[in-house]
Image (cartoon, rainbow, N blue to C red; front, side, top):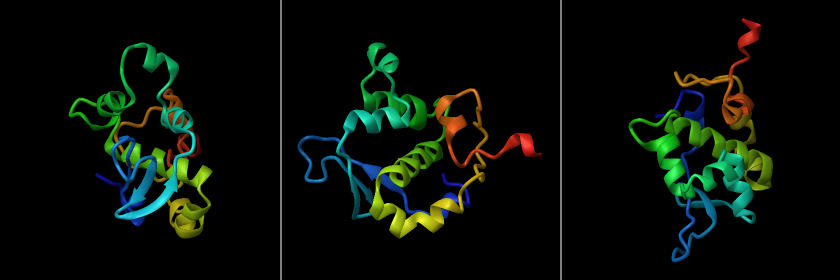
Length: 133
């Protein structure tokens, strides 16, 4: 599921269920890493736009279709990479604990679904600089 570069980071999960004690937390295993203050901003950072919302897909349905389902155009790895990029941008705790490991993933995406025309893929720090080769 993860590239060798991403395997240096823990797997991240988030919980947006109102009934959960973990509501709005991004966790690494059982450790709470970051509280999502701006849920809409989190959605947008992962690529869920007003256009996706207007199409009738709820966020979790969109995540399933884009990253998790067997026919998803992106890999689960991409979701983890985007969550890590979000954390690097917004979480002091993440940068202090995993900053070095995260920065070592830059340019090391090994996924077959690279798509420089996709906004999230093109702005992902793990996207190799293909023009340098």
